Length: 113
Length: 117
Image (cartoon, each protein chain N blue to C red):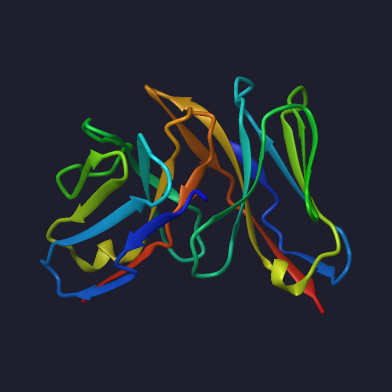
């Protein structure tokens, strides 16, 4: 069973702080990793893709990947109340003839004004 | 870019009705589309994977005769919930992946909230 583990939270941070979200995965052969944001009652929205070890920055978001440790993280700098949502870590795994995403259960982030 | 349109946004219908949901990739070609179901406060559950021009691959426990999937073109996939019953009420979400490769991310539609009375 290929698994993706996340702390379910809730994670609560004050406005302007850094929010740190973590994820581990079990399939050592995974090559692509994604972070999605899902607001309550809405569908997931892609925030970051990362494929290589190291950091990838996009605006206030930084994704970090360590394949040796099978660990992916997402940092949100200068957190805003509008960042309050569930953050889903997703790992692309081979399944039969197709690649499909395995999702973690998500981390609920609350940013307090 | 990478916009996925899903219709309808919500459906309320009587038990026994069949409901069709459409998923379109508006600005890219999607050889592979995915259908998910999500119950309140739970994670996404993959129902099936569809490749353009091929039969869909269903996940274990998902009835293929109950959830009919058609993916006739590179930009359109449909999910038909046949003879829907109250237990089929859920949030159905489609996603599409670019034809450029299996490492590409999936882009999600806005979802369809289905309520069966």
